[in-house]
Image 1 (cartoon, rainbow, N blue to C red):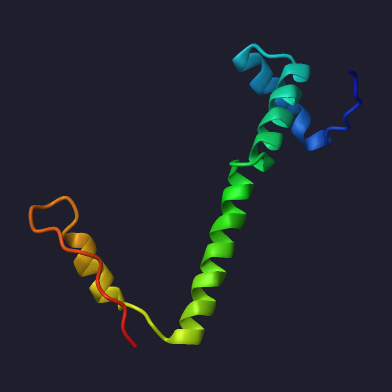
Image 2 (cartoon, helix red, strand yellow):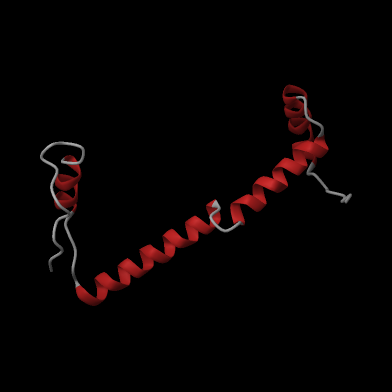
Length: 96
């Protein structure tokens, strides 16, 4: 299917340069750009992962506000320093 796309004037020279360097037509570059953009929004794409991350962070913040349970930065860093060593420790226990 053909679709007309208005490309801002300031991008045309850059598209020509990239097309020449990559040996791609403008049509192929637009197809690739649209495919990449849609891929960001597909389930499991970058935008969906970002939304899930924000939801998880908001839920964690709400739980902390409700319960007060946490670990300190020093506890987290000390625990992470043991990762991959023979002295690797378990996750620190949450406390108030």
